[in-house]
Amino acid sequence: MTQCWGDEMTDIIIIGAGPAGMTAAIYARRAAKSVLVLEAMSCGGQIINTPDIENYPVAAHISGFDFATKVYEQAKALGAEFKFEKAVEILDGGSVKTVVTAKNRYEAKAVIIATGSQNRKLGVGDEDKLIGRGVSYCATCDGAFFRNKDVAVVGGGNTALEDALYMADIASKVYLIHRRGSFRGEEATVEKLRQRENVEFVLNSVVTGLNADKRLTGIDVTDSRGGVRTLEVSGLFVAVGRIPENRSFASVIDLDKAGYAAADENCRTKTAGVFVAGDNRAKEVRQLVTATADGAVAATEAIKYLNEQ
Ligand code: NAP
View 1 (tube, rainbow, N blue to C red):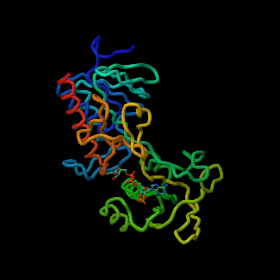
View 2 (cartoon, protein in one colour):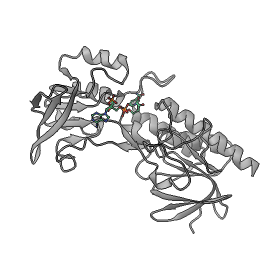
View 3 (tube, rainbow, N blue to C red):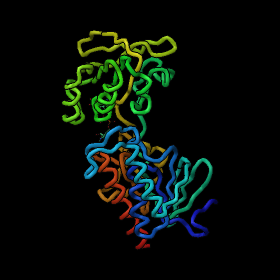
View 4 (cartoon, helix red, strand yellow):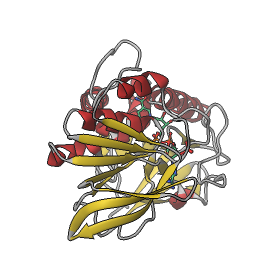
């Protein structure tokens, strides 16, 4: 059995080092609780792919990477411990929870699940084989490979809108393909896109084929009347939403049909001492500000739970 914090059991294990998890770590450390944050990939979660955050209070413009770095440094400075291991299960032993990773087992008095979500795929053609050969899920990571080329972005949410705006500065031409006639994302960003001469909206349309010769060479797009148009693009940025990362923890939390974790407004789940924070929680609004708010609420509830034990 691996322990951290010397021989003492960790107070709170936080699974996931996105904005929700790292905010929870800040709150828990400020209450002098010992904190271990387990992260499967790298700190920051999906926000690190956002080039410019404009809707977080006080920070009128900040990149997602800079935002995540600052939150990480704040949590670290307060004494949160971080380990890069993927949590695969939570075992509920009442007052002791065991978090199982691929390498270790960690015990804690409370657990906050802040695992966020992963990219949803289109499920068209050889999408998987073409990842890194024209198909991407992250414009800020891969956009530079498509300088002065034609690309397409699929989706109608804020991610797709921001990706299209980002690519409009890099690519020759950006097709923004959305399955409906109006966008789900913010009107302010839609308006910015309307001002760009190299952005074309392809609405009421879905991607139905990927054409490739080792690399992506084009996509087939079918409109709601059945008309098919082939767009010669070398890049396709897929931004059609995310899938919550909760399945590993289904023994201690209830999941809704879409896989989001059920929790009350205080982020409490059906299991005492297990809390959920961030985009993997069932809720209406998933924004950076609601993720950090969840982190604060979940940590505050976890602290209350620990103090009552
Ligand atoms: P999202 O808001 O869930 O939007 C996903 C989009 O993809 C929707 O327009 C949806 O169409 C479309 N879609 C879903 N499945 C599809 C499929 N199989 N084929 C074609 N289109 C499909 O996802 P998101 O844009 O990744 O954003 C996730 C959350 O993060 C949102 O709450 C968003 O506001 C937030 N976010 C915030 C910021 C920011 O605050 N700056 C930045 C990025 C994201 P329908 O509209 O028809 O359902």
